[in-house]
Image 1 (spheres, rainbow, N blue to C red):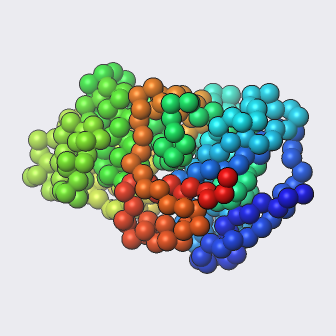
Image 2: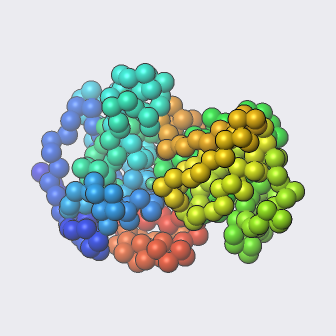
Length: 339
Ligand SMILES: [Zn+2]
Ligand SMILES: [Zn+2]
């Protein structure tokens, strides 16, 4: 058995280092992938640092994985050797609960399995995964661009796809980062009027180049008063604490405020505007199999690509430093040196 060469953190908060492991024999339902690309997501860093107390060490992170299928288990009928595939955050679920049957494995009643929670992820030359949670990358989408779509992309696609009801709907995006910049591109391609709210005023030109129609500096009620009561869907990708009363006041009737990040553990929601304006405050987490393949196809057709910086996988620790210093624009993609 050939060993897999990975970059692992041997203990919490340690740097990733070269580490080898021997995989179990290939399960009938699994595929083996020669990994070529990994998007670097902040969750990889949270897992390395065991911020949520669920990490197992040695930890091989990487959950925006693109590669080429090198082996298929006997029961796999949907993929073959040589296929270019992607694997995201969700690698398993019960498959039979109501939500799984709807293709919403992200809210599986029994809970889904995270790719790097007790399993080895993509920061390696090879990886194994269930064929059911590996997605074909459309030919017109290059592997480096596809990688960040597998976590960041699906995270913004799911709420946009769920809540955008008609062309021209006013969609506000709070924050321009790995998630926010993709949310702008997807919302624009879905026909929304896109309003970006950011505390970084220097990002206006770039937000507009991504497809934003309007740009506002996130600020005081006075500065944002033109927006009051006008936004149909407000998506918060921000990790900073903001004035949530102000955010709610921007929503029109039937408006939805959707949280993707967890800037604070709870917010106060004023009930009178919520009830009389029939507004909603919701959350959303990655996405299920149905939206994942749809999102990849939609991205390919519309050529929605993240803005990325390419670095070799052996510079993973430098790449993490860059993310932690908030210098990644907007996603780092780690390319495996080995063919
Ligand atoms: Zn992620
Ligand atoms: Zn389920």
